[in-house]
Length: 110
Image (tube, rainbow, N blue to C red; front, top):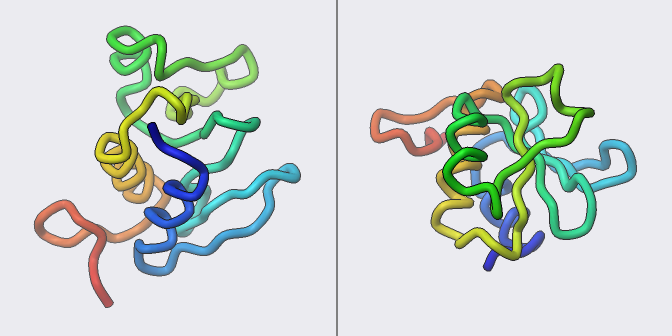
């Protein structure tokens, strides 16, 4: 089970990530949006695998009609995801948000 504190710690550990409010909710940005709390216990992240994630783990991953026009956004139920998978999702979202990853797929250290 992951928490908003886990999201905050993992996101802010990546180079050049900042936190600010977006639509009144905590959000984390690289060059663009990396992740945002959608509602209590639900996180929005970017991914290129939305259909696959929601298809294989619908109890964790989903989207609403609001997200239909943004095929890279997926919602994550934090209470149902482990921290390791959350970290992998945030790293993927970091890359899609314009963050630079090092040669091992981890955020580049500056």
